[in-house]
Length: 171
Image 1: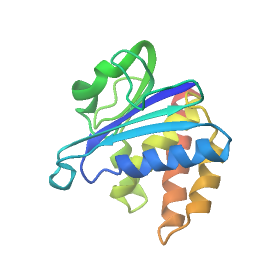
Image 2 (image 1 turned 120 degrees about the vertical axis):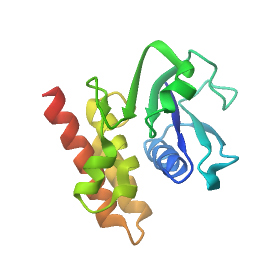
Image 3 (image 1 turned 90 degrees about the horizontal axis):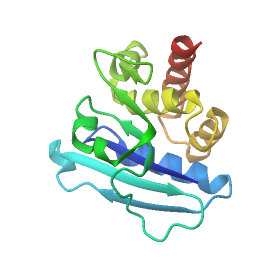
Image 4 (image 1 turned 135 degrees about the vertical axis):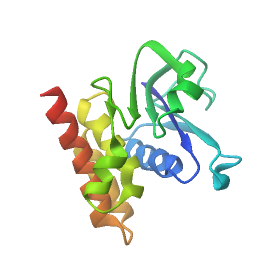
């Protein structure tokens, strides 16, 4: 159904966003396969997650040129892992100088709500707001609420800011 690559550096929440999407898929009744590579994550190294949603997949790894969606949490993420995206796939990237409708300064938006570390959720909101993902914004919000946690209020706000930013740019 959908193959998603998430890329960033340690500390950006790649693994959290992957878990959030996986939990959302499961709640919607989809099968999932996922794999994470986070070797030097604690020291700011590259982190990549492969997430396959739907049946019929036999391996959790996405082959180069096969990802439907790419989420890049670091502005150089696409340079490092962009080769996974298929030709007609969609790449959503956080960048300080947005240059396309699928690029957003997620860190700046997250800073406006007093939570720069929530840039990952801003980017996720932006992507889910575009309609490119297997789920809708309400599905992701429900999963966030279900997971709860002490940062639920700010997490929901960050997700909604990303959705709002997408709607402003895409109309």
